[in-house]
Image (cartoon, rainbow, N blue to C red):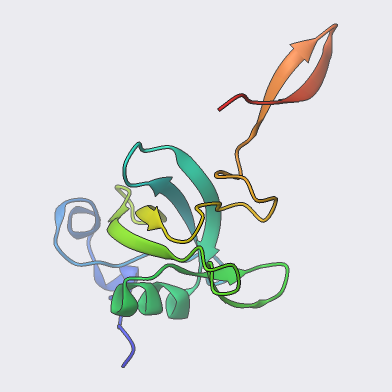
Length: 138
């Protein structure tokens, strides 16, 4: 079974911003941005993209699925590492062109392929007039 989404062209601005119809606005590549946060402390863990199939599978299974732009394939996050992301809540922004997933991460907890908890582990700073990256302390 695949979840069907209402096309935005069938909705008024009021319906999209205030109504109950879920009508995600996928971009010209068929993708929607997904910000992924830890359900316990709201830390941003990663940003990914979903196509309609990934979004449908996420809603059907409760496990986060994404579209890998680099591999051009569906991606069940944590399938190989065991760090599956169970979706606690999924919200959309006002114009339904971005999603926020609050997840619990299974296994030993890393979300990033570098084995860190979050993909956002470096801070951008201006040092001696140059933009530099430093590792954030957790």
